[in-house]
Amino acid sequence: MNNSKEKFIEFLIARNILKFGNFTLKSGKKSPFFINLGDINSGYLLDFIGKAMAQLIKESGLKPDILFGPPYKGITLISATSIALYNEYKNDVAICYNRKEIKSHGEGGLFVGKIPSAGDSIVMIDDVVSTGGAKLEAIELLKNELNVKVDAIVVSVDRRTKNQFNELQGQTVYSIITLLDIAQYLQSRDLEKSKQIYDFYEA
Image (tube, rainbow, N blue to C red; front, top):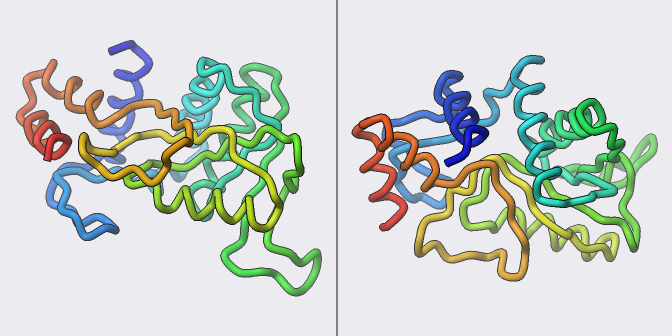
């Protein structure tokens, strides 16, 4: 595991963003851990996560024209990442997100920010990926409403398990860390929680 991954895991643990216990996920599945990027709620934390996302985009060779963030956590993350891409790499990337409901007054519409068009390279950014269902909904929304496609998905944590049904067939997903990264980090420090993560991954 490289230093960037270790640093990110240590950040999640130190800030209690990665929590251990007994949790029920959106799917109804029980989990021994939970990752809440809703706790990214200050300037320092936004700066850290934005730089980590920007570094992943840079190292993955992605060259987005627009960062798209599904509401709600994705909106915060595209903002932090866009700022980091400019500050760290002088890469000025536009952002866009969708509303939950169409706005009928003012500027109106379903989308806010730079509206994607054909030919734009779009990278979707969100907090985590589990089954990929929520990401697929956003991809379909962009396709149906704007006739554009998403080139890649970038998340902080890929928490898909070994035999998890993947709804994102054909989509490229990049993550700062995975479940196995977390398990290996914990195991390297002789922490008992590593077995819980391994068991969850294998189940």
